[in-house]
Length: 292
Image (cartoon, rainbow, N blue to C red; front, side):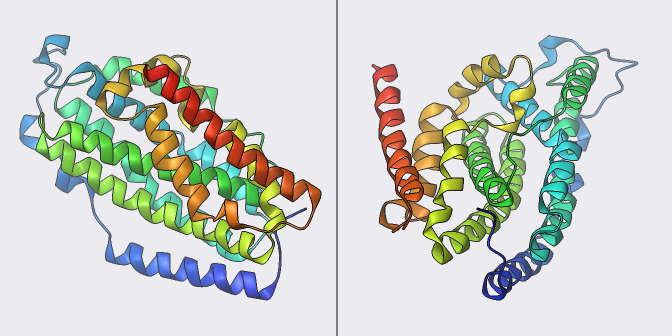
């Protein structure tokens, strides 16, 4: 069962894309404006030392992990470009727009870490090489599944940046402002992807069969890092962990797509609907037990 191809759907998605384009033009920004340039010093005259860190470990880890995830842009771009080839034209156009908007996030986060001496440039080079050489492989093989994935990933990123920005406020208000600004871009991307999924489900509720496998197997793209799980345990202290994913991402999208109210006609669609709702309750129970 492939992504629906009809004029009504294509027009709806084109309208969403044009709205995103217009919004993006009004939201244009340059990361240079958010950098604390006055803090920059030559590493030749003043070599890096960990004692120069001004942020707690969990905040540094959060920023660095976000930077590395954003850095994998070439792999995500290639995947989405290939996935949407021959699909709805607005989706192909959006990928190109998305690339131009995502590009500066990694640059902003890396520049901030180096300028403020909250990371060793040599160590950053090593982990950057690791994630780029490891790449990113996805088992997704259908355009709608990809959009379900990116909806979860983009909303997760929005929540991540907003929560980390709140935590960062007491250490560096400038960093908090930067993270909130990046979150605005991510929020715009999330809005597009989740509305595209919504449009598909409204036209054909049985397309829910493409939603369930993604939810069941979802992992953030930064998972290709060898120490990703360790990083996420550290980052929890800064405001993003399993609870935030379930309550602020997964449950939000399940409600947003009206999963409980859909009326699939096929046995496969009905089974997928039941599985999604059961999975949400199961993972909420597991998280509740882990907190005790």
